[in-house]
Image 1 (cartoon, rainbow, N blue to C red):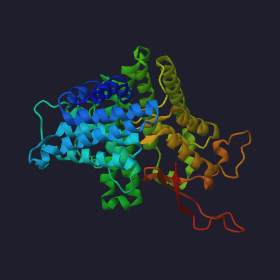
Image 2: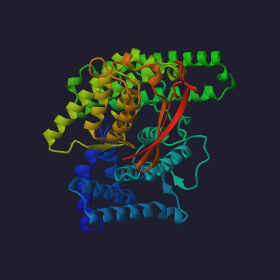
Image 3: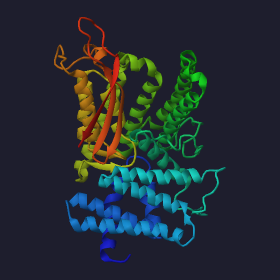
Image 4: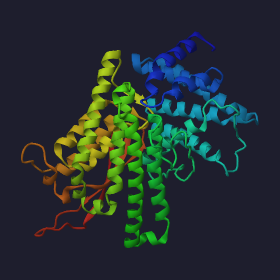
Length: 455
């Protein structure tokens, strides 16, 4: 390393930043692979120093020199990456992909979500180019002994690709139709009788959800999908297939986690997170999308599932806060994985029981987690806006509204959130038009409403 400041910041990254980034699943990528690569690859070394400097700045408060140093290191990392290409040489693909993950973390921590998505796009493009049957790019070389195997890098970019798709208007999941299966990692059609790790269980659940999306996209491309009867039959087939896969997944997961007391805090949190995502996946696969769009009351029958999601999130909050007190660290945390934000946002958007809804929003605010591109406090702000629209002018019989007290015409449908800039989002939803004078109907039926929110 070139200076004492670089050495000190690298030490901070190793001791403090890695612990934050490791998340709740397999921490090997950050705790071992990135650190090993940083000792040999200048691009990765400068990238982690940049990220460490940025993290240290957020920990100790604003210091201009730390921000300048972080950007200098960021620039050095980029120059190291492009140097072989400028010299007509090939750059090792695993080095570029590891650096890309660090860049996504850096830009997300800065609040530059557009730049983070650009890095995700770059990494996803490389993953696509490396697949069998694809014309190999002249820019990349394949390391004989890579710092990180594809079984580790592929799932990371599959999840980042999914996140970018969820918040970017018109963007499709670029890796959706790539065959990135890996039996050992769990990202595979075959589900074992018992999982070998929580990471394997997570990858397996990710694969089930990807399978469902791929099935729908493939079916939707067929002319017959426009026929309501054939569409309903196709979705019923998907529902049955997914139900079987979720049953197999649940059996393997329950067998692995039956002695949850034997897991450390991160493991216990991971178990609760996976339970939440299992419930959400089951509900989403079971609900008829067309019917729920026309009649929002179909969600009311899933109140027990909503309660279970909130219960798991409450347990996560308690575990996390106790761990922060015990270790003397801030409750805010940052990592690239999906955690509590999406399941709690799902409850806040589809559950109309006032108490449960407010509890889910409260938990989003208390957690203060940056989960990849989404922050829990922003999710809470958006969910609160949707709730206030639906509950406007309604009064509950006993304090909070019960689901039965929120009429169908008040309920929103087709709610979408898309990033516009780093500090603003575009919200769109369907709601009933104006009530017609002297009648019970609504002029124009459901209309699309658009809003912009800044924070």
